[in-house]
Image (tube, rainbow, N blue to C red; front, side):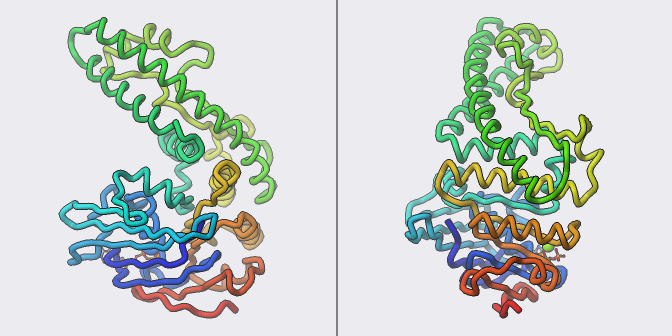
Length: 366
Ligand SMILES: Nc1ncnc2c1ncn2[C@@H]1O[C@H](COP(=O)(O)OP(=O)(O)OP(=O)(O)O)[C@@H](O)[C@H]1O
Ligand SMILES: [Mg+2]
């Protein structure tokens, strides 16, 4: 699963980009040259969203009416799948996969599964549970076909329950009907997440061991309500508190992956570089679980790989990414930072591009 050809128009300072990509692709250039924008363009194609802005408007080149991203994807059987997306400034959106109109972002994600590592990835440790829950759900979504429908149903049931909770007078019959429905679906969601986490955790431990000698880093899955009590009992017991607050306090919407080091929160103990290694291990472990289950690979987008890492750990991360067999698009300011650490890859499987003012020049890898 890889992008063979990528065309981008109207994303940030990228005007008219047309690239033939290999397995390992390095983009280097000065600040503001367009490296992150290229990774962002791929991300937009694979998710319909940016990783830098909540909406796509700031992503579209100033004065441009639209942005367009096209890719020829090679699947695991070697077939080529054309995929494209256009987003107008007025909000119109068209996505196509193999000539078929895309109905939602989930289809884009299934066609082009991406793993992004950038400065926001630290949110996995520093941020609230939301980013870890999204990370977990990305994994479950791609591995368990039935997960998405259950997830959507849980969101709907929660919205309904919360709307009823906000009424001054409770309607117990209506509420009970939603509680029964929500509880049943939440237990299914929990089973999906737990099953995924059980596969993910040993991969994470092994991957972190390949990257760094960091001991006592421990992950645990929290389902969002007491692990011994069925959700329907929790909802019944917390009804008056939920009513007071106007929302459901406990449930699958509070699930989390707790990351601890020697029993303490990881972000309070680990150095910045160590944090980067842990979050990279989480991403790579997730890609490994994905490949093992789907017999397909993700594409890795790694923005500014060298930052925060010393030479030894840059090498370890580069070696790990190379060994995965996934396509990698990686950026850095100074080419020497990556050339010096990237393990040898056959010439036809690696490409280096110099980025200048939104233009890309294919240069030789020294
Ligand atoms: N909507 C837009 N239209 C045109 N240019 C934009 C738009 N949004 C941002 N830019 C510009 O695009 C350029 C590329 O930004 P980008 O973040 O891709 O640079 P970069 O190469 O990743 O730099 P750095 O090394 O600093 O991370 C910047 O000069 C930025 O100001
Ligand atoms: Mg950048």
